Image 1 (tube, rainbow, N blue to C red):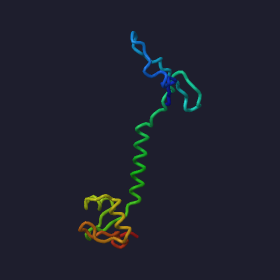
Image 2: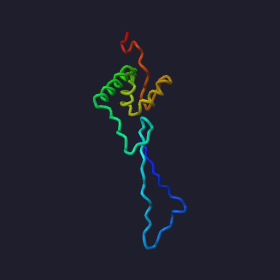
Image 3: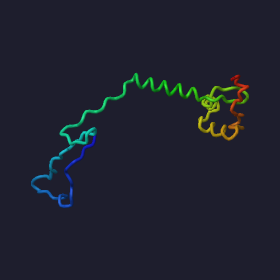
Image 4: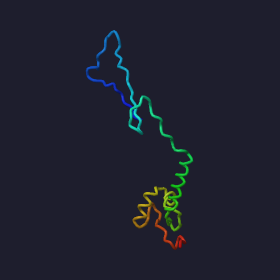
Length: 125
């Protein structure tokens, strides 16, 4: 919702007041317009409804399931970790910095040996 004022202070209005009466600016007129149609309105337009909690929960569940599909197993100090996120949590770093190290071939990182797990180690077919 956008509104604006028709009152504009110019240099001729500033500092002009009668000493008997304090200066008061003219009344402010506020105009509204309907964002759906672009037509001017006298009152504020009704706000669009907010998404329902149930819909939001289902979206969060879909995102969670999508992230589960993208998990890559990681070998951290010879132990198999389910994902990069889990390995990063154990090291105490962010998953983006650990992913960067793993993309570059895997090696020592903060005193830990890290590498993507090979399929034979994860027992995948």
